[in-house]
Image (cartoon, rainbow, N blue to C red):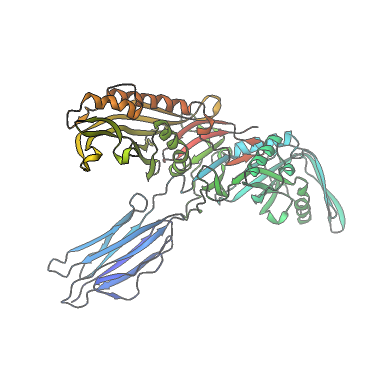
Length: 618
């Protein structure tokens, strides 16, 4: 009797799994179909491995794949070993990035000689839903924008529109509003409040009139998008137009998100309701006439999205896609979500990337219910790190240290920076010449170094901070060489010493005075360990250090502490009210009333994303 194992790889990740490697049937033979070359999200592949014969080893082998997130390929390896020994030992294992794509292994059949095991590949999306940035614009905020646009007559409050033999006359239109009608993530309804209006149309050769006063016309459609070529033609405030012109001058592309009421072919439905929200019956002719004449409203701009060319290392989108999230309890807290990627990265592959949980953009009452509908930006840890911390904050810290550093990324918002400088360029690498003593040239070779690392404090969900841990170090080596005329190059090390000053710090991102985003860095010096001195060094060595490092103290430990104190002070000053080092997210999205002007509550949310509440004019 031969033994066998039937293996199933189940893709529960929501991402495609592909790039299968050549299966290694180390022991045993494939019976039937080979594992699939790719496994779609929600699908699985099953294959059976049999013992070659009753005397051969049992099935053992491996197969590899890659899970595709859209921007990364996560290696997956699946192993099986069903021993033919007396005990029939079995082991089924998998290797993956367990923080991102964990694999759950379940033996589903252990009876008889034919066993079965399932490898289930899960996925842990990184907030916000694998996007780099998400701007959630609440329906309440959008409706305030539409009110302002009507007030400034950028949306008509009255109009007459003819089409064929039909004519819509709106003498007074109230504030238009929008709503999210369902969970399809693409639908948005616009509500047009006709205080006084009438529709004239032709039916069966006769001209008829329908009074639409006191009714609301509800048009269900998807948002349209078009690139802005001339900001002056937009139905937006002058502040918004000027801001968009500034973005275009930087070679950014700007796109309109708008409700197109001039194109009835885009309407998914149209209905008219009275003040009691009861449907007003329209004949087919009246319905068609109303659809055609709503062009008098034209286009209603909702937002302007920005896309930068190339792959800039900054927090500016290079890809954007809009979707909606419905909050059934209170429609004001439904949102239009502009989902973005930065640095030239691709749209995520995860199939639930648009499945946000409402409400996304609401302040909260003490009892946990939503309080105020507004806008909110969500930023992934990696985007904050690669788009701001690495290119802006870490170089400023390095500059304050006075030592050039190199930076390595360990994880999102976790970096290791290190660097050093020395006097090895002097005297053929010997360092600073100090004196001639008993026929020997004596030199001091010195190295100053700094290392520091960053770690996000994501457990503190009432703030947004990143921890710093670092140290300064000075290494000294005193050596002597025979005088040149002797012709000997032997180096004699007289002594070495190491001085260390540890420090810790905190990078804090916050909404500061005036509602502007500010960054501060605070440093606290730790207790310095006792210097490591392997030989007794003469006092002249310490005196030479003044010249070597431009120090003013003859105590190396005191001097390195003073240098660290100056570093801490300089660093705090660097970030104080310095626009060049501030976190800038204003170039992501513009509303018809203007760009973002006020921020509050900048925190790590419970999912680990950076979250900030945003206010716009209007």
